Length: 377
Image (cartoon, rainbow, N blue to C red; front, side):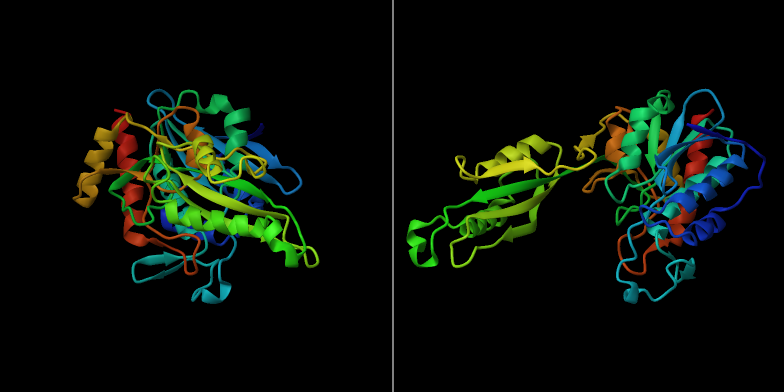
Protein backbone atom coordinates (compact mmCIF):
# COMPACT_ATOMS: atom_id res chain seq x y z
CA UNK A 1 0.00 0.00 0.00
CA UNK A 2 1.15 3.52 -0.77
CA UNK A 3 0.52 6.14 1.91
CA UNK A 4 -0.61 9.59 0.80
CA UNK A 5 -0.14 12.76 2.83
CA UNK A 6 -2.95 14.91 4.26
CA UNK A 7 -3.60 18.63 3.85
CA UNK A 8 -6.54 20.81 4.67
CA UNK A 9 -8.86 21.74 1.80
CA UNK A 10 -12.00 23.78 1.37
CA UNK A 11 -15.45 22.23 0.92
CA UNK A 12 -16.41 21.64 -2.71
CA UNK A 13 -20.07 21.00 -3.48
CA UNK A 14 -21.29 17.99 -5.42
CA UNK A 15 -21.96 19.93 -8.64
CA UNK A 16 -18.38 21.12 -8.92
CA UNK A 17 -17.04 17.70 -7.95
CA UNK A 18 -19.16 16.08 -10.63
CA UNK A 19 -18.09 18.67 -13.19
CA UNK A 20 -14.43 17.88 -12.47
CA UNK A 21 -14.98 14.12 -12.61
CA UNK A 22 -16.84 14.22 -15.93
CA UNK A 23 -14.03 16.26 -17.48
CA UNK A 24 -11.59 13.40 -16.78
CA UNK A 25 -11.97 10.53 -19.29
CA UNK A 26 -11.84 7.28 -17.30
CA UNK A 27 -12.94 4.52 -19.66
CA UNK A 28 -11.44 1.32 -18.27
CA UNK A 29 -8.50 0.58 -18.22
CA UNK A 30 -7.65 4.29 -18.06
CA UNK A 31 -8.45 5.24 -14.47
CA UNK A 32 -5.02 6.71 -13.67
CA UNK A 33 -5.88 10.40 -14.09
CA UNK A 34 -9.17 10.30 -12.22
CA UNK A 35 -7.51 8.26 -9.48
CA UNK A 36 -4.85 10.93 -9.00
CA UNK A 37 -7.51 13.66 -8.86
CA UNK A 38 -9.52 11.77 -6.22
CA UNK A 39 -6.45 11.02 -4.10
CA UNK A 40 -5.61 14.74 -4.02
CA UNK A 41 -9.21 15.73 -3.29
CA UNK A 42 -9.49 13.35 -0.34
CA UNK A 43 -6.02 14.09 1.04
CA UNK A 44 -6.66 17.82 1.03
CA UNK A 45 -9.78 17.23 3.16
CA UNK A 46 -8.03 15.38 5.96
CA UNK A 47 -8.90 11.87 4.87
CA UNK A 48 -6.23 9.28 5.57
CA UNK A 49 -5.66 7.86 2.09
CA UNK A 50 -3.92 4.74 0.87
CA UNK A 51 -3.77 3.32 -2.65
CA UNK A 52 -3.44 -0.13 -4.10
CA UNK A 53 -1.91 -0.66 -7.52
CA UNK A 54 -3.98 -2.69 -9.97
CA UNK A 55 -1.75 -2.19 -13.02
CA UNK A 56 1.55 -0.43 -12.44
CA UNK A 57 2.24 0.14 -16.14
CA UNK A 58 -1.02 2.03 -16.61
CA UNK A 59 -1.11 3.60 -13.15
CA UNK A 60 -4.43 1.95 -12.34
CA UNK A 61 -5.28 1.86 -8.65
CA UNK A 62 -7.83 1.41 -5.91
CA UNK A 63 -8.30 4.16 -3.33
CA UNK A 64 -9.05 3.64 0.38
CA UNK A 65 -9.89 6.71 2.47
CA UNK A 66 -10.98 7.21 6.07
CA UNK A 67 -11.84 10.03 8.45
CA UNK A 68 -13.27 10.12 11.96
CA UNK A 69 -13.26 7.34 14.53
CA UNK A 70 -15.52 5.22 16.68
CA UNK A 71 -18.73 3.37 15.91
CA UNK A 72 -20.58 2.96 13.71
CA UNK A 73 -18.42 2.86 10.59
CA UNK A 74 -20.14 3.57 7.29
CA UNK A 75 -18.35 2.79 4.02
CA UNK A 76 -19.25 4.43 0.72
CA UNK A 77 -18.32 2.60 -2.46
CA UNK A 78 -17.86 3.95 -5.99
CA UNK A 79 -16.12 2.86 -9.18
CA UNK A 80 -13.95 5.31 -11.09
CA UNK A 81 -14.18 3.74 -14.53
CA UNK A 82 -16.84 4.20 -17.18
CA UNK A 83 -17.88 2.14 -20.16
CA UNK A 84 -16.49 3.21 -23.55
CA UNK A 85 -18.19 6.10 -25.31
CA UNK A 86 -21.33 4.35 -26.55
CA UNK A 87 -22.66 5.58 -29.90
CA UNK A 88 -20.56 8.76 -30.10
CA UNK A 89 -22.76 10.14 -32.89
CA UNK A 90 -25.80 9.73 -30.64
CA UNK A 91 -24.54 12.28 -28.13
CA UNK A 92 -26.11 15.71 -28.41
CA UNK A 93 -23.70 17.22 -25.86
CA UNK A 94 -19.96 17.02 -25.16
CA UNK A 95 -19.55 13.75 -23.20
CA UNK A 96 -16.64 15.25 -21.24
CA UNK A 97 -18.28 18.48 -20.18
CA UNK A 98 -21.09 18.45 -17.62
CA UNK A 99 -24.17 19.93 -19.32
CA UNK A 100 -27.34 20.80 -17.37
CA UNK A 101 -30.64 20.92 -19.21
CA UNK A 102 -34.25 20.40 -18.12
CA UNK A 103 -33.34 18.94 -14.74
CA UNK A 104 -30.71 16.55 -16.08
CA UNK A 105 -26.91 16.67 -15.80
CA UNK A 106 -25.36 15.06 -18.88
CA UNK A 107 -21.90 13.58 -19.36
CA UNK A 108 -20.12 10.25 -19.74
CA UNK A 109 -20.21 8.62 -16.32
CA UNK A 110 -22.53 11.26 -14.86
CA UNK A 111 -25.09 8.59 -14.09
CA UNK A 112 -22.85 5.54 -13.72
CA UNK A 113 -21.46 6.50 -11.35
CA UNK A 114 -19.66 9.82 -10.99
CA UNK A 115 -22.85 11.47 -9.76
CA UNK A 116 -23.05 9.08 -6.81
CA UNK A 117 -19.35 9.57 -6.04
CA UNK A 118 -19.80 13.35 -6.06
CA UNK A 119 -22.72 12.99 -3.64
CA UNK A 120 -20.89 10.97 -1.00
CA UNK A 121 -17.69 13.00 -1.35
CA UNK A 122 -19.72 16.15 -0.64
CA UNK A 123 -21.53 14.58 2.31
CA UNK A 124 -18.46 12.88 3.80
CA UNK A 125 -16.33 16.03 3.87
CA UNK A 126 -19.02 17.84 5.91
CA UNK A 127 -19.41 15.37 8.79
CA UNK A 128 -17.41 14.19 11.79
CA UNK A 129 -18.90 10.71 11.53
CA UNK A 130 -16.59 7.73 11.05
CA UNK A 131 -16.58 7.33 7.27
CA UNK A 132 -14.63 5.06 4.96
CA UNK A 133 -14.52 5.36 1.19
CA UNK A 134 -13.54 2.67 -1.29
CA UNK A 135 -13.03 3.76 -4.91
CA UNK A 136 -12.36 0.91 -7.34
CA UNK A 137 -10.98 0.45 -10.82
CA UNK A 138 -12.30 -2.01 -13.41
CA UNK A 139 -15.93 -2.41 -12.29
CA UNK A 140 -17.17 -2.03 -15.86
CA UNK A 141 -14.90 -4.89 -16.91
CA UNK A 142 -14.32 -7.89 -14.60
CA UNK A 143 -14.17 -6.25 -11.13
CA UNK A 144 -10.43 -6.79 -10.90
CA UNK A 145 -10.06 -3.85 -8.50
CA UNK A 146 -12.76 -5.02 -6.09
CA UNK A 147 -11.46 -8.58 -5.97
CA UNK A 148 -7.94 -7.35 -5.26
CA UNK A 149 -9.23 -5.01 -2.55
CA UNK A 150 -11.05 -7.66 -0.53
CA UNK A 151 -8.20 -10.10 -1.02
CA UNK A 152 -5.13 -7.98 -0.27
CA UNK A 153 -6.67 -5.26 1.92
CA UNK A 154 -9.33 -7.16 3.87
CA UNK A 155 -8.39 -5.31 7.06
CA UNK A 156 -9.82 -2.04 5.65
CA UNK A 157 -13.31 -3.57 5.73
CA UNK A 158 -13.04 -5.25 9.13
CA UNK A 159 -14.87 -2.70 11.29
CA UNK A 160 -17.43 -1.62 8.67
CA UNK A 161 -21.06 -1.85 9.80
CA UNK A 162 -22.74 -0.93 6.50
CA UNK A 163 -21.63 -0.44 2.90
CA UNK A 164 -23.55 2.08 0.78
CA UNK A 165 -23.00 1.72 -2.95
CA UNK A 166 -23.91 4.94 -4.76
CA UNK A 167 -24.71 3.21 -8.06
CA UNK A 168 -27.54 4.95 -9.96
CA UNK A 169 -31.13 3.95 -9.35
CA UNK A 170 -31.83 3.13 -13.02
CA UNK A 171 -35.54 3.59 -12.50
CA UNK A 172 -35.82 2.58 -8.85
CA UNK A 173 -35.84 6.12 -7.44
CA UNK A 174 -34.07 7.52 -4.39
CA UNK A 175 -36.69 6.04 -2.04
CA UNK A 176 -35.83 2.49 -3.12
CA UNK A 177 -32.87 0.67 -1.64
CA UNK A 178 -31.47 -2.52 -3.12
CA UNK A 179 -30.61 -5.05 -0.40
CA UNK A 180 -29.51 -7.71 -2.87
CA UNK A 181 -28.43 -8.37 -6.42
CA UNK A 182 -28.61 -11.17 -8.91
CA UNK A 183 -25.45 -13.02 -9.98
CA UNK A 184 -23.96 -13.65 -13.40
CA UNK A 185 -21.97 -16.27 -15.26
CA UNK A 186 -21.00 -17.16 -18.82
CA UNK A 187 -20.90 -20.79 -19.96
CA UNK A 188 -19.14 -22.36 -22.93
CA UNK A 189 -21.08 -25.16 -24.64
CA UNK A 190 -19.40 -27.44 -27.17
CA UNK A 191 -21.38 -29.62 -29.58
CA UNK A 192 -19.67 -32.63 -31.13
CA UNK A 193 -21.05 -34.11 -34.35
CA UNK A 194 -20.06 -36.83 -36.77
CA UNK A 195 -18.85 -35.40 -40.08
CA UNK A 196 -19.83 -37.00 -43.38
CA UNK A 197 -19.96 -35.72 -46.94
CA UNK A 198 -23.00 -33.53 -47.41
CA UNK A 199 -24.50 -36.11 -49.74
CA UNK A 200 -24.40 -38.60 -46.83
CA UNK A 201 -25.92 -36.22 -44.27
CA UNK A 202 -28.37 -38.93 -43.14
CA UNK A 203 -25.40 -40.89 -41.79
CA UNK A 204 -23.86 -37.81 -40.16
CA UNK A 205 -24.46 -35.97 -36.90
CA UNK A 206 -24.57 -32.27 -37.67
CA UNK A 207 -23.05 -30.18 -34.83
CA UNK A 208 -24.70 -27.03 -36.14
CA UNK A 209 -28.07 -28.76 -36.07
CA UNK A 210 -27.42 -29.79 -32.47
CA UNK A 211 -26.56 -26.19 -31.60
CA UNK A 212 -29.72 -25.01 -33.36
CA UNK A 213 -31.91 -27.48 -31.48
CA UNK A 214 -30.28 -26.42 -28.21
CA UNK A 215 -30.95 -22.77 -29.05
CA UNK A 216 -34.61 -23.35 -29.82
CA UNK A 217 -35.13 -25.34 -26.60
CA UNK A 218 -33.21 -22.76 -24.54
CA UNK A 219 -35.36 -19.84 -25.64
CA UNK A 220 -38.57 -21.82 -25.48
CA UNK A 221 -38.05 -23.08 -21.94
CA UNK A 222 -35.93 -20.42 -20.22
CA UNK A 223 -38.91 -18.89 -18.39
CA UNK A 224 -39.64 -22.12 -16.52
CA UNK A 225 -36.41 -24.13 -16.32
CA UNK A 226 -34.89 -22.44 -13.26
CA UNK A 227 -35.90 -22.11 -9.61
CA UNK A 228 -35.68 -18.32 -9.45
CA UNK A 229 -37.99 -16.03 -11.39
CA UNK A 230 -35.04 -13.64 -11.66
CA UNK A 231 -32.81 -16.11 -13.52
CA UNK A 232 -32.64 -15.47 -17.25
CA UNK A 233 -30.33 -16.83 -19.94
CA UNK A 234 -29.46 -15.91 -23.49
CA UNK A 235 -27.02 -16.92 -26.21
CA UNK A 236 -24.26 -14.32 -26.51
CA UNK A 237 -22.08 -16.06 -29.11
CA UNK A 238 -22.35 -18.99 -31.54
CA UNK A 239 -19.76 -20.58 -33.83
CA UNK A 240 -19.78 -23.48 -36.25
CA UNK A 241 -18.32 -24.17 -39.67
CA UNK A 242 -18.23 -27.13 -42.00
CA UNK A 243 -15.00 -28.19 -43.68
CA UNK A 244 -15.23 -28.46 -47.45
CA UNK A 245 -18.48 -30.17 -48.32
CA UNK A 246 -18.75 -32.07 -45.06
CA UNK A 247 -21.41 -31.89 -42.39
CA UNK A 248 -20.17 -29.77 -39.48
CA UNK A 249 -18.37 -31.79 -36.82
CA UNK A 250 -17.88 -29.10 -34.15
CA UNK A 251 -19.91 -26.10 -33.02
CA UNK A 252 -19.96 -23.99 -29.91
CA UNK A 253 -22.00 -21.38 -28.08
CA UNK A 254 -21.68 -19.07 -25.12
CA UNK A 255 -24.64 -18.78 -22.77
CA UNK A 256 -24.91 -15.76 -20.52
CA UNK A 257 -26.96 -16.06 -17.33
CA UNK A 258 -28.29 -13.54 -14.85
CA UNK A 259 -28.82 -15.67 -11.76
CA UNK A 260 -31.42 -15.16 -9.04
CA UNK A 261 -31.09 -16.01 -5.37
CA UNK A 262 -32.72 -19.46 -5.59
CA UNK A 263 -30.22 -20.55 -8.23
CA UNK A 264 -26.42 -20.60 -8.34
CA UNK A 265 -23.71 -20.64 -10.98
CA UNK A 266 -23.41 -24.42 -10.59
CA UNK A 267 -27.14 -25.14 -10.52
CA UNK A 268 -27.72 -23.19 -13.74
CA UNK A 269 -24.95 -25.14 -15.42
CA UNK A 270 -26.56 -28.43 -14.33
CA UNK A 271 -29.92 -27.36 -15.78
CA UNK A 272 -28.30 -26.41 -19.08
CA UNK A 273 -26.38 -29.70 -19.25
CA UNK A 274 -29.67 -31.63 -19.30
CA UNK A 275 -30.23 -30.26 -22.80
CA UNK A 276 -26.97 -31.75 -24.12
CA UNK A 277 -25.81 -35.11 -25.41
CA UNK A 278 -24.05 -36.32 -22.28
CA UNK A 279 -21.76 -38.66 -24.22
CA UNK A 280 -20.43 -36.06 -26.65
CA UNK A 281 -21.32 -32.48 -25.78
CA UNK A 282 -19.86 -30.51 -22.86
CA UNK A 283 -20.52 -27.37 -20.83
CA UNK A 284 -18.09 -25.41 -18.70
CA UNK A 285 -17.89 -22.06 -17.00
CA UNK A 286 -15.99 -19.73 -19.33
CA UNK A 287 -12.57 -18.97 -17.90
CA UNK A 288 -11.67 -15.42 -16.93
CA UNK A 289 -9.20 -13.69 -14.63
CA UNK A 290 -11.67 -13.02 -11.80
CA UNK A 291 -14.54 -15.12 -10.44
CA UNK A 292 -18.06 -14.68 -11.71
CA UNK A 293 -20.52 -13.16 -9.27
CA UNK A 294 -23.03 -15.06 -7.17
CA UNK A 295 -26.29 -13.46 -6.12
CA UNK A 296 -26.76 -12.08 -2.60
CA UNK A 297 -29.50 -10.72 -0.38
CA UNK A 298 -29.31 -9.27 3.14
CA UNK A 299 -32.37 -9.79 5.33
CA UNK A 300 -31.05 -7.74 8.24
CA UNK A 301 -29.50 -4.40 7.31
CA UNK A 302 -28.47 -2.06 10.15
CA UNK A 303 -29.82 1.49 10.39
CA UNK A 304 -32.64 0.91 7.94
CA UNK A 305 -34.99 2.68 10.35
CA UNK A 306 -32.81 5.79 10.11
CA UNK A 307 -32.59 5.50 6.32
CA UNK A 308 -36.36 5.11 6.15
CA UNK A 309 -36.89 8.28 8.17
CA UNK A 310 -34.40 10.25 6.09
CA UNK A 311 -36.08 9.13 2.86
CA UNK A 312 -39.55 10.01 4.14
CA UNK A 313 -38.44 13.49 5.25
CA UNK A 314 -36.61 14.21 2.01
CA UNK A 315 -38.98 12.74 -0.56
CA UNK A 316 -42.32 12.30 1.22
CA UNK A 317 -42.22 8.67 0.10
CA UNK A 318 -41.90 5.35 1.90
CA UNK A 319 -38.72 3.29 1.81
CA UNK A 320 -38.99 0.34 -0.55
CA UNK A 321 -36.46 -2.49 -0.62
CA UNK A 322 -35.73 -4.35 -3.85
CA UNK A 323 -33.44 -6.98 -5.33
CA UNK A 324 -31.51 -5.41 -8.18
CA UNK A 325 -31.33 -7.46 -11.39
CA UNK A 326 -27.76 -6.61 -12.29
CA UNK A 327 -24.26 -7.34 -11.07
CA UNK A 328 -21.28 -5.25 -10.07
CA UNK A 329 -18.66 -4.68 -7.41
CA UNK A 330 -21.47 -4.73 -4.83
CA UNK A 331 -21.57 -8.52 -5.34
CA UNK A 332 -17.83 -8.76 -4.66
CA UNK A 333 -18.02 -6.72 -1.44
CA UNK A 334 -21.03 -8.77 -0.31
CA UNK A 335 -18.82 -11.89 -0.19
CA UNK A 336 -17.30 -10.39 2.98
CA UNK A 337 -20.64 -10.81 4.75
CA UNK A 338 -20.93 -7.09 5.48
CA UNK A 339 -24.41 -5.73 4.66
CA UNK A 340 -24.33 -3.91 1.31
CA UNK A 341 -27.10 -1.66 0.03
CA UNK A 342 -27.31 0.07 -3.34
CA UNK A 343 -28.74 3.56 -2.82
CA UNK A 344 -27.88 6.28 -5.27
CA UNK A 345 -29.28 9.08 -7.44
CA UNK A 346 -31.58 8.48 -10.38
CA UNK A 347 -29.86 8.38 -13.75
CA UNK A 348 -28.82 6.37 -16.77
CA UNK A 349 -25.71 4.53 -17.85
CA UNK A 350 -24.26 2.71 -20.86
CA UNK A 351 -26.21 4.91 -23.28
CA UNK A 352 -25.67 8.03 -25.36
CA UNK A 353 -26.55 11.27 -23.55
CA UNK A 354 -25.99 9.59 -20.19
CA UNK A 355 -27.27 11.73 -17.33
CA UNK A 356 -27.93 11.96 -13.62
CA UNK A 357 -31.19 13.52 -12.49
CA UNK A 358 -30.31 16.84 -10.84
CA UNK A 359 -33.07 16.81 -8.21
CA UNK A 360 -32.32 13.24 -7.12
CA UNK A 361 -28.59 14.04 -6.91
CA UNK A 362 -29.32 17.00 -4.64
CA UNK A 363 -31.62 14.87 -2.48
CA UNK A 364 -29.25 11.91 -2.18
CA UNK A 365 -26.36 14.20 -1.21
CA UNK A 366 -28.43 15.72 1.60
CA UNK A 367 -29.77 12.32 2.64
CA UNK A 368 -26.25 10.88 2.90
CA UNK A 369 -25.20 13.77 5.13
CA UNK A 370 -28.31 13.56 7.30
CA UNK A 371 -27.89 9.81 7.65
CA UNK A 372 -24.24 10.15 8.70
CA UNK A 373 -25.08 12.78 11.27
CA UNK A 374 -27.86 10.69 12.79
CA UNK A 375 -26.00 7.40 13.04
CA UNK A 376 -23.10 9.01 14.92
CA UNK A 377 -25.29 10.34 17.74
